[in-house]
Image (cartoon, rainbow, N blue to C red):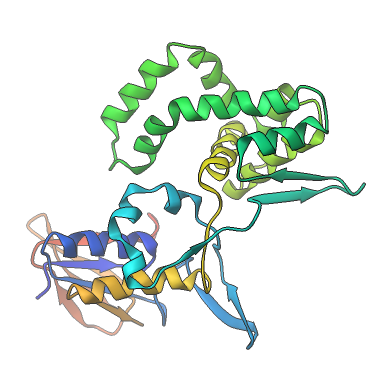
Length: 288
């Protein structure tokens, strides 16, 4: 009987399983699909000679995450690669908005679109550098992130923080118009906001566009060498090295609860997988 049963072999489930294994727990992961990874998978469905990422493909949050760094996945075969530039938005007139690896280089490129846009980018990046430790703590501290939230609130009450808070609640179209005179800076913010599936007019899309742009500026948009699936392979390999197991094709249909405790997971084929200490569910809330 494993100490913990994890439902779902997506990246969050696999990271959680690895952390439990590091704490000395025995772990079994149940995955409904024929292979692990969730949205972090690759295949050769487009052409046998080419690896294609099925969903996600670049990982600035993984690059910034102290949790991922602590797993030392390079020991299990993961290698990261960076393109010469982070991303680019070509325009129809032949010009191109480019997020480069250096903030100064990005600013210099934006300055060619409109005077002052380079300084505007540097200002946005200076705010990020000042708040980055607290923002990353908010992102990576288990919920609810009370202490990072209090620290962030204190910072926002000083040094123009209230203006920043207002800015980050803006739609990204409005934020781009307020910060930049040319198209390039606006495109960088808007393109990054779209990664959250937020339309340019949505409140808060400006904050997400800023966050993703600044993550790209400070950490790049690294990709696993060999495709997104290599990240999943490393997580699975690491878990198995610590005695854990991943079983695919096992769709969970019920969490068995007795006397207020989750004690087992029942699968679609009728199997009951007992859990000595905990059940973790890396699934959507409606599914849970």
